[in-house]
Amino acid sequence: MSGVTAGEALPQSLMINKAAQALRDGCLVAFPTETVYGMGADASNPSAIQKVFTTKGRPSNHPLIVHVASPKELRQGQDDWVPVLARWARDIPEDALKLMDAFWPGPLTLVFKKGKDVLNEITGGQDTVAVRSPAHPIAQALLHQFQGGVVAPSANRFGKVSPTSAADVRTEFEGNSDLVIIDGGDCEVGIESTIVDVSSGDRALLLRPGVITPKEMLAKAGVRVYGPEEAVDAHAKPQSIPRVSGSLKAHYAPTTPLRLYAPGRVLDALTEFPDTKSRVAVAVWDSEFSLGDDGHPSAQFVEVGVPSDSSAFASRLYRTLRDLDEQGWDLILFPEPPTGEEWDGVRDRLQRACFGSGPSSSNHASN
Ligand code: TXA
Ligand code: MG
Image (cartoon, rainbow, N blue to C red):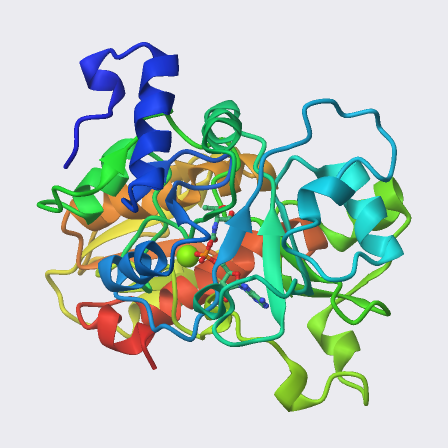
C-alpha cells in the first residue's frame, strides 16, 4: 500500500498534492468522505476506472458516482452548482437545483441525464449519471486540487461492509501496493449517501435511502421525493429503472451470520442455530441496558450496546459489524430498527447485510 497516510505525518497539503498527482497518473486513491471511504479514480480516464472495477471485484455494469468539488463561493443561490455540473449533466431539473441548494455539499447523490462526454465505463452504458459533492474537507481539498471529477465507489470488496476508517480500507485491500490511502479519521455519517433520481425531470425518485430522508427533502428544499412503492406506475417501466448495486438483496455483508430480532425475541432468533456451543454477540439498545434473564442456556452471549438515535446508530453500524465480524462469533444478532423514515437507511443496510451474511457471502453478493 502506498504511504500517503496520516501515520507518516505528512502535512495535509502535501498529502493532498501527492494524492491528486496519483489520480492524474491513473492510480487509485482511497479517501474519506462524510459517509464512507471512497475508492477514487480520474473520471476521465477509462483505464483508471477499469482498475476500480477489478480492484473491487465489481461487475462492470454497476455504475459509479462522480464526485465533484463545490464552487469556490457558495452564494446560496440556486444556480451555484450549474457550472460544476456542466460537464456531467445534460439537463438540470428544477427539483435538482433546489436539492443541491439545500443539501450540497453533503450525503446526497443525484442521478441526471448524462452529458455527451461522460464515459460509458462510469454509467454502465446507461443514459444517466450519478453525481455528488461530498462534505468532508479532505475530499473537497482533493477534488479542488485535482480539478476534475473523481469516480468513487465505497472502498470495499464488492458486496462487503463499506469502510468507515482508513484502517478498514487497509484491511480490505491488504497487499495491494498500488492503492494510495488518505487517512482522515472515522466517517461521521457512517452509511452511504441517499440517492435520488431526478433524470426524468418529472418525479424525483428515491433509489437508495440514507440519512437525508424524503421528509427532510420536502421540509428543507420543498421537493417531493417518491419512494419505490409510489413509483410503481406507468412512469416507472421495469426497463427504465436504473441499476443500483446497493439494490441487490445481499450487500454490505459480514462473513459471520447476522440476524435481526424483534423486541424481546432474542430466543426466537436463536432457534435457527441449535448448536449448543454457539457464541453469540447480541446488539442491544443502549437505552435497554441488558437482556437480563432473556439469555439462552445453550448459548454464550455477549452484549454490545447500540445507540437508539438513528443518526448515531448509522454512524456506528459498519464499525460495529466489522469489529464483531473480526472477533469470530458464531452468530451476530441485531435488534430490528424501529419503524419511521429516519430508520430507513439503516434498516435497508441491515436487511441486505443479513441476507448476504455467512461464510459464502461473496457468492450471494454477486447474485
Ligand atoms: O456515500 C456514497 O455514496 C459513497 C461515497 C464514497 O461517496 N459511495 C458509494 O458508491 O456508495 P457505491 O459505488 O458503493 O454506490 C453507488 C451507487 C450504486 O448502487 C450504483 O449502482 C448507484 O450508486 N448508481 C451510480 N450511477 C447510477 C445511475 N446512473 N443510476 C442509478 N444508480 C446509479
Ligand atoms: Mg458500495
